[in-house]
Length: 385
Image (cartoon, rainbow, N blue to C red):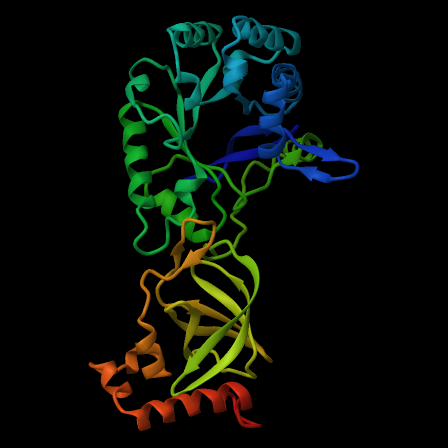
């Protein structure tokens, strides 16, 4: 079991910890929970794993020198056991942990196909005195009707709503605000999960989230590491992360075109994200230089060089890319190949009627020769482009 602190947005003091199961395989190394948990559910060992986790977490938390609440994830399979409340009671009794210090995190999937048994389990758990949190809110079951009766104490804003919320034209921030308002109306706390950068922290704080969980404060750590910190009374966490959220980058090896002014070069794209890319192929391009990346099939992305070292540049897109629906990225719009052939330079330099440029054979042939000269011969020695 590892533990990740949940921190108050106002005081930066740890308010609770979430218990997270980790598996280090002797041959395969660290196995992610999203890999082994579904398998455990499929082969029928998740109940035994869940019961072990409850006992282990209660035992650890009882030995902490600070009365922090501890949260345990409960799978839908585990929650629907007829004797689940008795399992919780047994873990509390054997460890001596006060019930109010145990928090059970439950996903919306427990309400699918519910025949009334879910509400009875909720009532039994509340009678024991434990706290209940709704995990991954908004990512699964679409109906809000269960909030009328389910006695949750906390709503956790899934990290999918936090990720990208600081990007322009992203609706995640508005969704986050709506969740916070809903929780406040129902007298519940809100936890923003997966916060990694300072701009994300500022945003979730501004939107009213009461608690924050994520790498900005700490990764999940073994119980021994957490215990040492608690014994030293180090309850305040300072944010440690990048100033701005950086979109996930995917490693690629792909030849693309780079257009600068009236010249075009062939470069290699090394990685790609929604907001930028790393390219290689032209020497010592000054930061701040504006270029256009020709990604192929009419996809032109206006970009600015932000970092440059030798033949490698990091560029930032003027307009973020979007998902292509097949685990890839693409531009929002595609440009006619006739326009690309007519231009050979950034979109801002296109004439009002680009087809006029290719009307005459002489102009067309000259443009083609220019493309061949640049692509085959490359830039002149001693120049940046």
